[in-house]
Length: 390
Image (cartoon, rainbow, N blue to C red; front, side, top):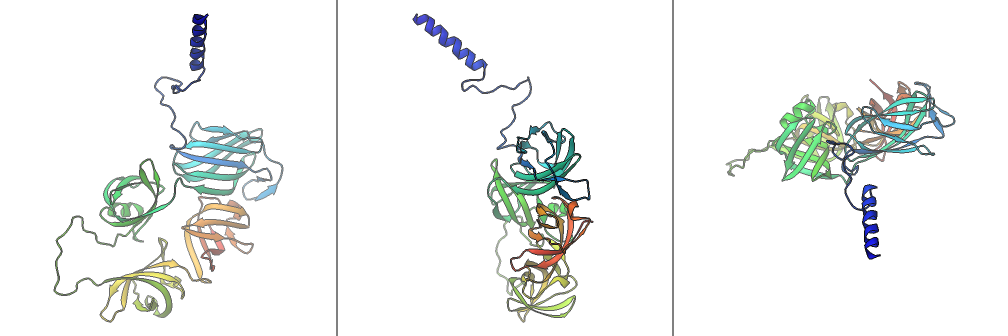
């Protein structure tokens, strides 16, 4: 009897292993194919909701209330990734590769493709989508990077790779970037040129931790700052040699005629010239955008009388009620036309019924490149008077 019980126990354990029970690791389904990495460490996640209260109309026709369009399968174009929507229209795709992503919706009477812009490995993208036949529209788009954003400031060392896939260190911290990393630097330089100049240059990075590295979302390279590549022996000059100056404060007065303006910033007289560069969050601007009440960071040369000849003016905060213009890509589009909100180059933009759209508001999508003109609000957001796509 005891032998019979042992035999039964052995047969049961073999059956459990054959059926996937126990703690044995799962083998690849075919020889030579590596197991798929866990979604938590490989690729992005797209969570979606196919709207049951609104569906997309043909291009240019806006949105119309209707019954939900049947959507049974959602796939990632160019890959074998697919999933199904539940009874409420919810779906999730994991392991989405970094880069430009497109979703394909299919079902009875449905065959629609929808670009959702660039995604980054580790991101979580949450979408609400309206689908009707061959048309699909993003109703809302929010994106959460993995981990918490962390500023890292210092001198770039050991730069390797290309502008679309690179690695460097700052104070021993290993940082990686890719083609979706936002570059800021000298306004007349291309992204590729800034990359070429950034080694041994001071930089400000916003990054997220992942896989033992920091992944750079934004990279501001101070290409005008001279940083020695090797330590130098300190010397004591007989007379002061460095006239560089940097101040930050509120612009209180504007005098003179462009380009030769005389400004008062943080109580200091600041003079501009035709070579003075103006930037707003990395975007090149003109001296005409300056308004009393702005917070401005000045970099220039200190004169004997204490005034500064400005080489660069960086607008940190815009004065409420001032005219505003910025160009960039739409992100996090939310709302219903014509009242929508979205982000662009770090600014929150809101539209109203009086906003002029070219083309129509219904054509606006996350990832679209637009020019926004509007009025700065007290909370730092922008009320758009026009939104134009080139």
